[in-house]
Amino acid sequence: MSAETLPHLIDAQKWADREGKIEQVFPLAAFPRLLEGAVSDEGEVKVSCKVSRDTQGLMKLDADFGITLQLSCQRCLEPVTTTVQSDVSLFLVRSESQADELSDESDFLVLDEEGRLALADALEDELIVSLPLVPLHDNCEAMKVDAIEEFIEEAPARENPFQVLVNLKDRPEEK
Image 1 (cartoon, rainbow, N blue to C red):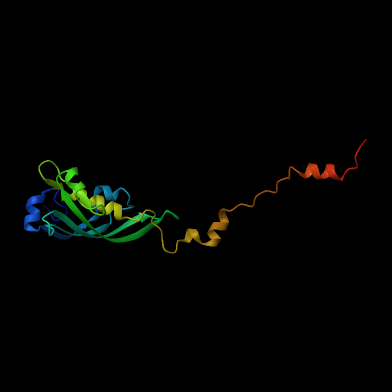
Image 2: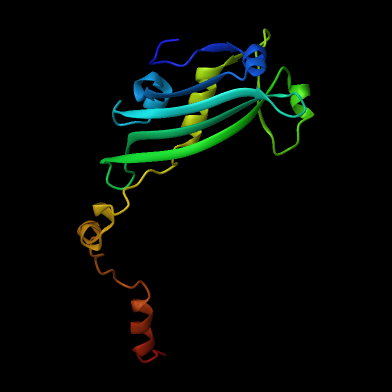
């Protein structure tokens, strides 16, 4: 494993038995799918993850993330620095039927046929899910009243279609 990338595939059984850990800061460029939503590749991702076994002997992935990246503000479309802290706890199961035995609140990942986990992809998925749905500046200039008033046009006065009826009402009846 290079210092700039996560291992792609790991043997979940071996990592769980040894309580394999990774604690490292990676450049944002190490996560290409995460970069798709970013304004630039400047930023970093702090990853702390451990594969272990719980008290029942089930394999589990526990991870903490700290992300700093530039996203596009959805009000003014200018870059906004976004920092996200997140943690995740996932059971590692060999099949969907094994996942059915977990409690409804438990999150899980299904391993491949050889019992391997695509660690880099799994962590990148969790990073993407942890990003804000609508990134915004705290005090975005686009939301100030003066800026909004520039875009509001005065509606032209429209003629009331019922005005004709008022005029008919005021006329004396013809017989």
